[in-house]
Length: 245
Image 1 (cartoon, rainbow, N blue to C red):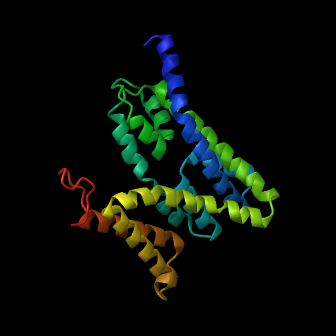
Image 2 (cartoon, rainbow, N blue to C red):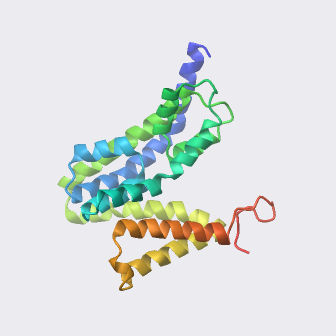
Image 3 (cartoon, rainbow, N blue to C red):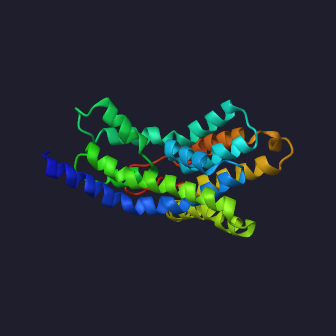
């Protein structure tokens, strides 16, 4: 690959990553407000986002920090939530050049998120280092800058405005879950089961004593296992969505 092709590969990645970066800015703005309400400084929040790049993992981890949870509980919760990135990286590794260096693979792995993976896996050509760096660059900038902006706003905006903007997080999760739940009874079942477990842990006398981090771990594992057992993925075209039968 000559110099012009390498530049074009990087520019293509940047163009493909632009919509992701814009979306990340809006979502991470809500995270920045959330972190500021807990007393985390804007710079610290931005560094946290820059080094993690995970929405659900960051929200869960920071919330556990605010509740004074033990570090082991925080680590296990974030690890479980972020395990999916390992599977995504393994999948993308099959699309990389066999002679790509370990350092290059680590750089690519750092920038893998759900949306970056979705765009990269659909690319028909072999994934180059420059394309992946271009693809992940704006999402990284958007997620970090949005967090910093939200944290700054958290110290400036009135409480009523901060409360309204914090709804963006829940809107994001609803937007992600509902289309899949409407198309697949299996996804709907797992979501409903996880919600039921969460409610039980919140209101039942004995279960409500379980620390927040372990609630997340238990609900995630039980809902995932239930979905795998009751609605396994079927390769047959008669039931492509892994529907419950």
